[in-house]
Length: 483
Figure 1: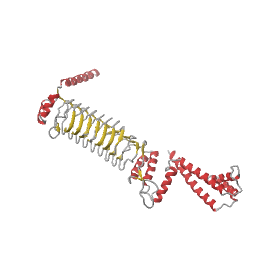
Figure 2: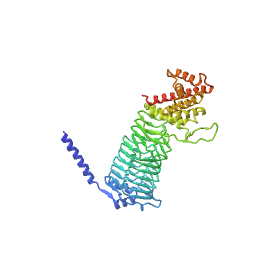
Figure 3: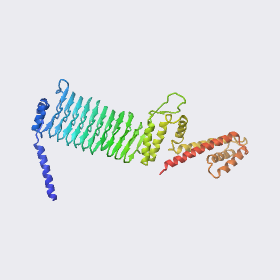
């Protein structure tokens, strides 16, 4: 039985190779002559020769445009063979493949050059074999795939050089094939996937470069998406209403200083979502829906803040650049808490408080928030309140010694410094059983059991500050070692 299957498979492979060898190719000048006769003549010929391959490989179309600078393959049917435009050249023209039909064979635009062109594939139909624009060059050119229909094919747009132009896949439909934009370069333009629909495979941007670009995934539908460019200097990444059924990975590299918005508002994720990178803005995940884990553990954000305007009461620190950043950070915090990522939730909570300062929080509350930030980084630091507690204790010890009876000298071995240390330590750690007796003995020695009003005020102030710093140390320990 196994031998019979192998023989059948080998026979099928041999038949396929034989068919490919039997296919004839319309190419070169013969293909140009037929194309010049127009759509009707071309399609009539294809109807009679549906299995032929078509090759315009290496042809320079620069001199083929009409008086309106148009160069048209609009409505052309290319039959069931492969279609080859590899290394062809198009320049200074409007190139139309609008509603063209590419049949069952592969389509090659690899290493094709488009210079100062508007290229239209609007409504074009591609079959189930590979479509490749690998290493194509688009210079000062716009490319439109509006409403294009791709079959169950792999679409290769990798290592493409795209400069000073726009690329649109709006309302395009992709079948069950992978789509690759790996290592492509996009400069000074817009890249749009508005309402594009992708099948059950993956779209990837491994190692791509975006420079001064606006990227839109608004209302697009993907199965799996991996967006991990090598360089991104784009101003906007918009993915409002995006829907992803499978895995989604967004890795924003450190070269994102030009990024002004990263918008996932009302997006939907039915698979695991990972967002990582160092951002100088706050990504917007408000109103998003997700059904699997969202990994934000490697996402670091920096709240954009600006100098406040003059007014009364005065704002004592910088203000969040956007009034919506507080709500965006609150959403990030909620997602992190839902996924039990406590440390990420702390980071986002700290930035949320900064974003609300002077905008949503009252003036007095904002001052307290500044103090909370300075003394403990919102409960994330143990060192800060410990240093502050030590500083208050040392300063209080010096004041107690200075205000002590004049009979004591300034030497450490003299009773004054030792008793001042005991008084300060007892006041800093009032919960210890020995603290009360140590304080009483020190006051008796230093002030003959009759401290002045100033000493009492210093003791009260030290006690209050020590209580606050001890609380912040405890908060930091709790946050650090929370299970």
